[in-house]
Amino acid sequence: MNSLGIPKAPADTRVIVAMSGGVDSSVTAALLAEEGYDVVGVTLQLYDHGEAVKREKACCAGQDIFDAKRVAESVGIPHYVLNYESRFREDVIDAFADSYIRGETPIPCVLCNQTVKFRDLLKTAKDLQGDALATGHYIQRVGTDGPAELRRAVDAGRDQSYFLFATTQDQADFLRFPLGGMPKDEVRAHAERFNLPVASKPDSQDICFVPDGDYASVVAKIRPGAIDPGDIVDLDGKVLGRHEGIINFTIGQRRGIGVGGTGEPLYVIRIEPDAHRVVVGPGSALGQQTIRLSGLNWLGDGDAPGSDIRISAKVRSTQEPVPALLSIDDNGNSAVVTLDTPERAVAPGQACVFYDGERLLGGGWIQRAA
Image 1 (cartoon, rainbow, N blue to C red):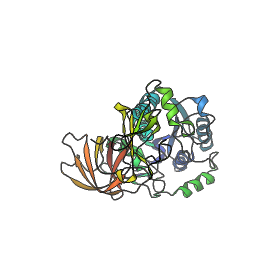
Image 2 (image 1 turned 90 degrees about the vertical axis):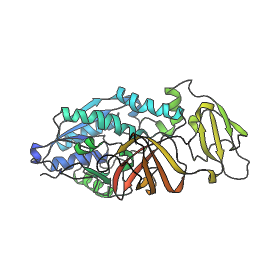
Image 3 (image 1 turned 135 degrees about the horizontal axis):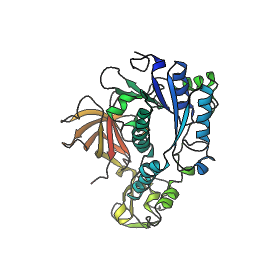
Image 4 (image 1 turned 60 degrees about the vertical axis):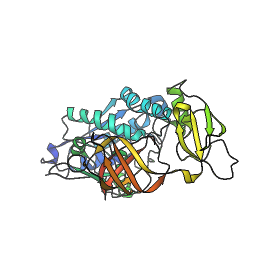
């Protein structure tokens, strides 16, 4: 059994590495090549090359493709670039825009992992006769006999399990995450040791297809005419002002609402897309304890449980999991999570992700409250 849990010698084990052009995926490729695996690097071109080449903290286009190619040459592995632009636009960019128009706050990185990376790229990895697909994600995969378990990364500050809740069991069995047990500074040290051309490259931070964080202009460009002005109202329905489109607001937002003078800070409490209305109120109105989910993905042992179970839940990527009760509907596709203590700013379109200690149990998409 080799270090990836595959019963072959490393030289006889083909590993396809998803190379974004960043430090993490580059170190992943270099470490596996150093161990003697038959490594093949694959980079996805996901959006417009001309637009992306000017950006420093994105991924999967322009300079990043060039960087991935340089790393592959440095490591001594073959490298291929696959044009997934049309798939990425349909499955991620268009879905991102439509989600905002519905008054939601989408997470395009989850959709990207769920579709073009772990669905389409994984299929390509198998077509290339790969024994595994490796990525630079910070998450741990445990197990060689039977179904693999996914667990939070050793480096809690880098953990990406929240963004990988939609990974299926079949995908988890084929995937490998060599960096899940390392802190980031160790990964940087490996990049220096290998003398990789991207060793000092900054981490990607923005949504790759949203320049300067201005998502509203991206949505307006993709869906022209679908953005209508409307009223900003208080909890009693009193009109406080007007807005230029609900895409400019998210649940829990405080700054840039455009109304004031009530004597206390106002927050976006909910968004009513059919009425093009934004409802604002005090921070005390933000708490939510019961959350309805759709698109459920279960990664626990066996089938999804038929009775209520205790879990820890994350409703935002930046928070620590909190105690909750999970009730999965009979259809296995939807669920209700009841938090022990109300959480502020639970936003439709975001994910609620389940844990048992460090183990990732799955999750679902947060729906609008009734």
